[in-house]
Length: 588
Image 1: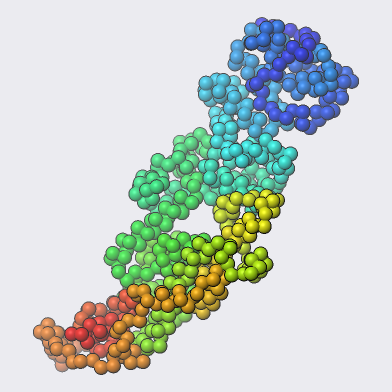
Image 2 (image 1 turned 90 degrees about the horizontal axis):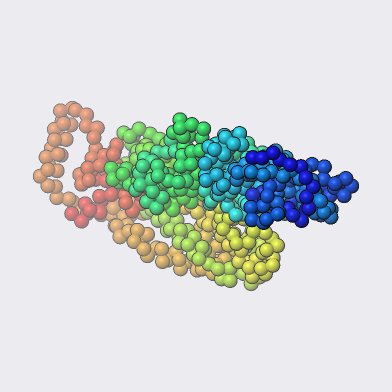
């Protein structure tokens, strides 16, 4: 580089470089004051230029663009400049970058664009750039990543901060935290910020990091093998996934040790889907060993969790409706926890008196027909609720049975609220009241019905024992069916005709107290005679015989069989015959 020269040159002979990424200079704070100052005393600090590479006799501006533009706006024809000759491209870049590097008013997107340009001009040599500007490699990569990976919606906000004043306090540190997330998570984060899940004005970079961290999952805590590609085939193996912090370690960690210990899943929805897939796999394995397996909640699930469990596993027993017990306890049921720290683990439970009504019922006491009918009716309503949820989801706003649909919908929202989740809100087409109002009354009604849908679904979601569907849910089903012009009685009649919901034929042979009307004497086979003879001999010898077993299925007090139709443990109808086998015994 030759010795720089200080000269007065024509403003018209200077052309700004494209390397300077500063935008909207004329709108920057203090620009009007700078114009007034130049009109009064000229440009006091020289701009920096070098011979233009394409325009002979002209100059390319390398530093001082704000002063240059203010001079033009002030009508100045001459400006003081330092002219550099013999510079390499890298040295010319240094002039521009160093000028902007120490400016306090450089905006986040401008800083990111400057670094991205350096990477482009230096052939991607991050180490060389870091050394030249005196920063760490990770500092360089984080800012370059903003330019490359930040979604356009976030870029638009920070390129037009005058339209989004609540984000004016956000720095480049905020953007580095956002840009390293998957695009879908960035969109969700934008919804969170604009829908007031947190206040942008009061959100520091540390606050944002903490907020984002709540959604991230440490892969070291996953209960499945990270190399397993079959758990959720669409997602593939976690170890090969790009949506984890370990895939781009230089944006997240300072050392290899940190990568191994702190690798996190960046896609919370995928992580939850794998947790559910693992529960399904575990349940299938346990059910193969324990056909009578039931599901039990160890914690009270929120509405979203309850819906996921119902859709993927089916009904479960609430934590209030059972007590854990030893495997050998009378009436003990094998159960799998479906949530909490013990999710997927096997335990044994007894249903409480406030639960299904089956716990603590002694063998030898049959279930009265009245109670059996009530349980079957509750089971039918549980299925009707599931069917009605599907019908509600398929119903359009034009099909609801209100003459004045707008007033009717507003009344429903006023009574039951709008429980749309922020995940669902992200999919709603209209993002502001102004947009929706412009779309017209018809679109307003359609959107109101669309966003009220989750509330109706929540009202119809029942997660207790299917034979204990409460009156409250039946009342809800009746008025919601009426709302969408569905005949609930016809629905119930159709459900009652299905297999598993019709009245069992065996009930015809039972009295109202649940005992058989008349049982024919059973011809005993040789093995049964031997067993009876053995018991008689034992009794005669004065030995205590504590084991009572069914002569057909072999179940005992400590290991009762489960009626597949009612889902309840069997009871004794004779000394050696359980209720599950009474019909079979009559046939024999």
